[in-house]
Amino acid sequence: MTPSLLSPESLGDALRSSGFAAIEGLFDVGLLQALREEALALHSAGQLQAASTGRGAGKQRAGLRGDSTLWLDDPACGEAAGDFLSALDELRQRLNRELLLGLHEVEAHYALYPAGAGYVRHRDRFRDDDARVVSLVCYLNPHWPADAGGALRLHLPDGPRDIAPRLGTTVLFLSDEIEHEVLPATQPRLSIAAWFRRRV
Ligand code: OGA
Ligand code: MN
Image 1 (cartoon, helix red, strand yellow):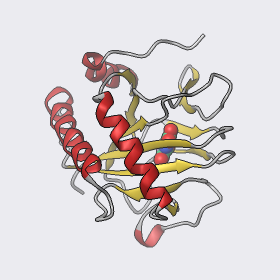
Image 2: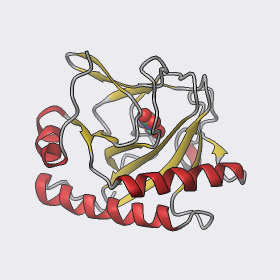
Image 3: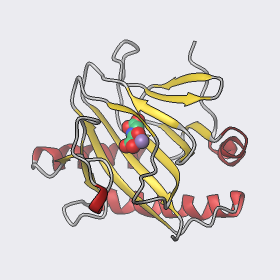
């Protein structure tokens, strides 16, 4: 049985006590649908690029991950991306109030995994970039059959926990602690991954 998702109010407590929170209903569904449409249009226009791991000098070419991405602050992005970055900044301030994390900024990208693609087990901190404190993944797939694969698998101290990438579900976790992976899916899988960063 899939453990149930938490309500938005319990986010801070869950992150504090277990290092992760899987939430239902954190963002407005209309905004999530607009983000989905924007991402699909950008993809059709060839704006998403095969992802690499790490940024800048430490960049590693793929093999580890099969998604294509576009940063939400890219000029090609539209209104939905801007609205979502504003919502993420409000969330950043809330996390600072509730958890005193001193989060300074947030970065986010669209990610599209074609059928069969995944992302091997990893942490979200890179040797050349240890500014990431909290990771967030927000899913944009309205219909996700139980047998479609594509779960986010969190490797927790008491064992793995799989979360289906369904629109309305948002997962937050501590970037330097929680190892995780994306399991291959039988259909394309659309999401936004975001990182709340401290000043380094
Ligand atoms: C990532 C990542 C998880 C997901 O982009 O670093 O782990 O469920 N994404 O898309
Ligand atoms: Mn990750």
